[in-house]
Amino acid sequence: MAAMLEVENIHSYYGHIHALKNLSLNINEGEIVTLIGGNGAGKSTTLRTISGLMKPRKGSIRLQDEELTRLLPHKIVEKGVVQVPEGRRVFGRLTVVENLEMGAFACRDGKLNRDNLDRVFTLFPRLLERRKQVAGTLSGGEQQMLAMGRALMANPKVLLLDEPSMGLAPVLVDDIFETIEKLHQGGTTILLVEQNARMALQVADRGYVIQTGVVVLSDSAQNLRKNEMVRKAYMGEN
Amino acid sequence: MLERLRERITPTDIVMWMIGGSLLVMIIWGSAATLLAGLYTPRHWLDFVIFGLAQGSVYALIAMGYTMVYGVLRMINFAHSEVFMSGPYTAYYVAAAFYRSGLLESHPVLCLLAIFMVSMFISSMIAFLLEKIAYRPLRNAPRLIPLITAIGASFFLQYVFRGLYGSGFQAYPVVKMLEGHWTFIGIRILRFQAVVIVAAALLLAALYSFIQMTRVGKAIRAVSEDKEAAYLMGIDVDKMISTTFIIGGMAAGAAGAFYGIMFKQVHFFMGFIPGIKAFTAAVLGGIGNIPGAMLGGIFLGLIESVGPSLFLDGLGIVAPYQLKDAIAFTMLVLVLIFRPTGILGERLAVKKA
Image (tube, rainbow over all chains, first blue to last red; front, side):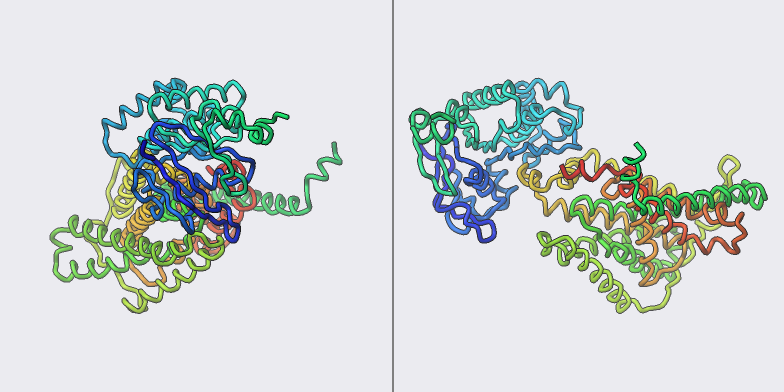
């Protein structure tokens, strides 16, 4: 199986702080891969680097053998790597539909956009009910749905999810993971960053564990669930 | 209870309220005295209001540029006055050429349109280059630095245009068609004022619907809310910022053409006062807020035109009209003291969250 997204030996810095040290990972087509690690381990930094919000000093990022490393963020979205950022970051003063239109900004194919809009509304009927509402007035769960719907409007080949369950009530967390499962069954390739390692390892095919910018472990999700270090450090077991 | 109140009210508050209160008393007293003395007829007031609307719509158009740029970059573009000046100053030469060739006489509408277009084009190009050359390299610098650059760019543009076109006043040719007045339903209105009010209203409506309804307009709003999220949606943020400057420049160029029609003269320093007034208007309406800037501009135009006679004449102040700038800037100070977010502005804390 050919790798969809390949991240090879990247080094990223915040000023003088060496945030990612020789980090490599790859995601095959149709897979869910999860990135787990504690606060400040470099999970979000990895996603920011892939999305082009940060430029790595060394290393390369490729989508289906196409170099993404030097592209601007909006070009990377056009190529098909789309991120749902941490904290949702919906446009609070735009309506739900306008937010979704912004997701489709790079795509000028009217029919495809309408199809995608239908798909998003089927996936999240709640958004259809609230389509004329200003996004800032949605609940946290609804905003998360909107953020994911907005990203799906861009026809992602690879969807990057940064902490989709953050700050949500447990019931809503289940909903979000159910949606991730559905997207997976629909064939979407997903890189999932989560603090909630237990949930993440349940939906994922494979996982990487990172600590202070270094990949310390990578294995199938099944094996990681059994791994003692993972259980202790990230799943809160003794 | 009293203790708590005392803790919350500082001496500064008391001084501020005293200033506000005495101004309010002055305004009410002055207005009452003016009205009771019957110094002006309703005709006069109507003329003041119409002139105020014309002047206010010019301010509103310039204020759009301030407020939109603040929206996307969170900076005050102090060189916007010069963006406003550059259009009509350049268009003057086109107007003069039309006048000399007699075209202005034979085809006034076409010529006016052409003057208008030239003014809008030059202003938008200056705004575009300003952003590209002066502000873009400083995009990630601390906020004070682009502000200082803006002031520098303002001087630079003033003196470039002085060098290009000379330092004297240039008189815009008189367009015969716009002289005299029209009468609508018993209201006499000077022709050029009517044209300015109607054209500006159309432009403002067009601008507003562009921002609200088009794909690019929505993207500009998205960029002003969250640049990074906009990037992650595949929006070319740099391009949207350029577009914002171009649109703001076009509005300023249009305002400049109206200014040329109304006041019939241009000068390299002509942007300063209208620019700072339009900035006041943008702050009045709530900086970053587009309908606010329009409202603020028209409100300021009206206050400036009606205010001196209404508030000051009754207090026995001689030649009150010369104090119109004082009234405009007093408004700015009052707004900054009592409602720093402007008429339509939202609470800043909410915006940052």
